[in-house]
Image (tube, rainbow, N blue to C red; front, side):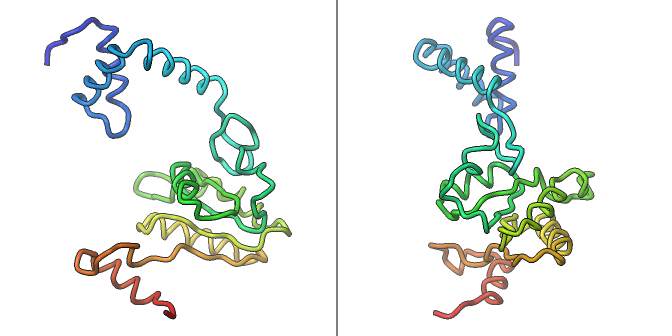
Length: 200
């Protein structure tokens, strides 16, 4: 497609197109919207991006991203230090927080083990997790990892490493989602739900 605007605008479109969920057409629409709303949207967005660039950092304790270090979650006195919820990525941490699913603390691995993609234990923060698990105040490690082959491989690997830590290792339940209809669920989900059935 031929360029319809100057190189500066094309550069903006190219950068927007790199964002997840935005293809070239969506990026063009987003760029045009930003340009039309320059005062109300583009300038505040530009300022917010600069602040994020200057101030956002990775929490040295859990791996969350925040403008303070340790992060807001780690320094919250209402959090239960006995529980560490292990997630693969910051997006998973944020999802659990949106759901208000736990009052524990977190540990972000950075990814899951994936030999095909060249991701091994040395690429994750597993050593730091094991060290945290040996802290006397920690009683439970919740493995909140995806129900994928890589996620479950990572969960088993971590469980093996925590054998000598005095902690209970649990994982998220797998099965029928809230509001789910059995006829629409895949066989793996139905099998997991049947195996992990609970008292009514």
